Length: 107
Image 1 (tube, rainbow, N blue to C red):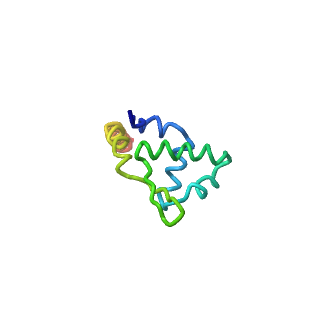
Image 2: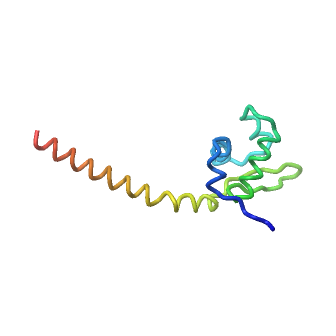
Image 3: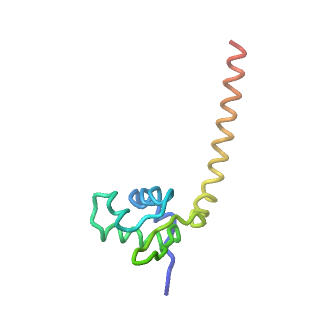
């Protein structure tokens, strides 16, 4: 049985979030990613495996090297979950802005 890991459990780990930030701008090899952390390479490899299983990263073979790329589609479920909260906070800040404008007019 091949169970897909939960995206939210994957991004709960600060190291995995840092890895996502690293590969967001450019693809990187496991060694290049590991060089950014003060942990053992097998630990980083485990993080990469989890992120790949969650489809947050994808692997691409380039010659003898494997490059990891951010998979934006994998973050779609996170964005969909966060969207109602973002809208709620936008509405609250807009209401606060209106209150502050009215306050300034009265003073």
